Image (cartoon, rainbow, N blue to C red; front, side, top):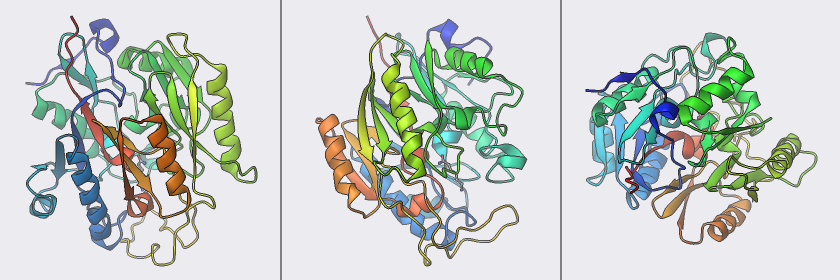
Length: 370
Ligand code: KQY
């Protein structure tokens, strides 16, 4: 049975591995929220199936689906993907799932952060998130692993990126946003991250991607691809508000060393230019609800190639059917020469406010170090 631990990962010698380390499996949640996914989520389910099937060519995939959608998910995903019944408020398992931790003795644990739908009732993106807030615990129960939980500490998995060797990167725009932990100072948040991710250094970028619905999660602007090595979403267009945001991130990372004293290698990953906007057709089909303003034709989307998932031997890369897709593939293939780059046109996921990294959560392989 899963125990709630009162210690910290730092004290117990557990760390969150880099995503580029080996995985046991990847978790996902079947989409169905009709006020976020147009036409009762049917178009996004098609893309979801593609993402899940591509990942399953590299490592096992487990999909959580509600009782209503269980049969549909099971039949649509085929024999190679495990489907389990689990309720949720939406599909963003990067943010609602456990942050898995490993030690050197072959043990697995996790952190269960408090989730408040990216800002609670005042600033958040939906008004009920009880089911999402239970996902991490339910997954730990299924996996029979113990978990750490800090009371009153709101965090989403997409708002942190770790290298597994003592460094974590976050954005101030997100972590210091008043919808999350207004009762904590920056130092206290820094300390919580150090204790619960078992890292020595937090690098605080100012921003993420312009108009990102999550208050600028770090996982949309950069990605650790190896220790001390990141790809960073980039534009040369000085008239684009993103230019300053990416430039400040580049300058800060260039001026900092990681927890082991290494300089960062920063590879620029060019963003779509012009930015992706919603078409008239794409703006239709979502159920209307009180708390959400529907997207309109012309609305700029926070489309970024940095929102990919690294799997065992591959990269599942979002593309948008624009000329920069090719540059993104070339850049990633160059920096990850031993990985197969698999592209998926993910506009449909983007319309819901995120991308491939946001809808996946890797469970690391247990490691035993002698
Ligand atoms: O991690 C994410 N990108 C979640 C976005 C939620 C958007 C809801 N419309």
